[in-house]
Length: 74
Image 1: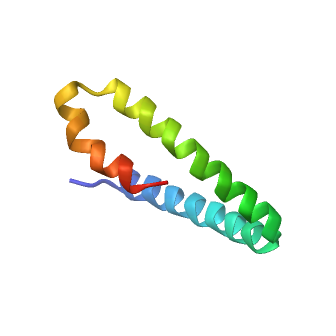
Image 2 (image 1 turned 120 degrees about the vertical axis):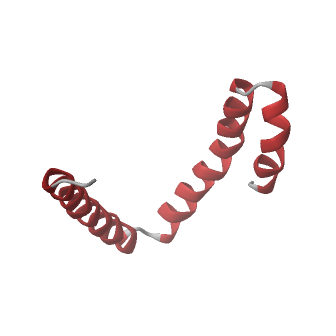
């Protein structure tokens, strides 16, 4: 059963999330095309490293379940 404390905490988290999203939206609007391409390039290059690290932590039977997801991304 939710308490007033839960609702209050949830409200604070939602307000913080909305503030953060507004800051991100402003930053993205001010971002130049070169900056955007550089950021996307970094994300694309890091994805394979992230996937490899994630898969190395899985048990062999779990890795086969997640392999198609890793291959679906650049």
